Image (cartoon, one colour):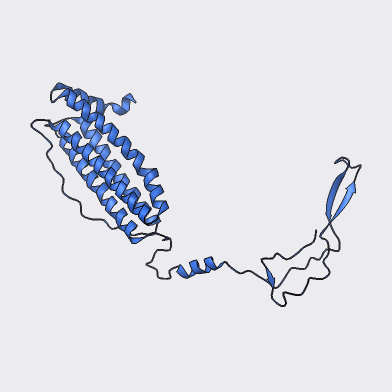
Length: 255
């Protein structure tokens, strides 16, 4: 085995000068009767091998790497992690954060309504409190992703939600659940719009994030609340609402 310079390297002095006195680094000894069996070959270092280090070898980075080095910002307020994150995608993520916080705010208002002593539907209060927390977690997940991609989170105003959810014909339980279904469908529509923005800007990381973290969960939430709406329409506004509320209250315990 001979030590040769790789074609990717070049000598500083004269690239046309051949390396003389190349000495084999290893020698092979045939040992037919050793403990390794007949025909075994033992490789050992050659005494005359040149142990001097190779000098004058330079490494040339790829041109693509040089371009990336030129793109690294030097200002302290500019993100170092940002790469292929367009302004449109950054703005769309901030809009989705606002959507999640608004929906969370409405669910929190529903929790406060059903937790009143004059309403006292503890199962619905529990359900909407958990839904509010879930939407807030979605917003925080988007905020973390925004920072991870080198964007800036810009929180927007949150609209004041309703505080009364009673309905003369439907009753408060059915009316609130139908409103929740509409909010989940609206959130899903906004997520699909965000996905479209990511595709238009060829941001495969953002599309993967939306698909993996939100879309499937949103479809499952729509299916679950749709079933709740169907059940509440069957039971009407009377005693059946109390039984439905008890089901929600003990849902975790039964699972």
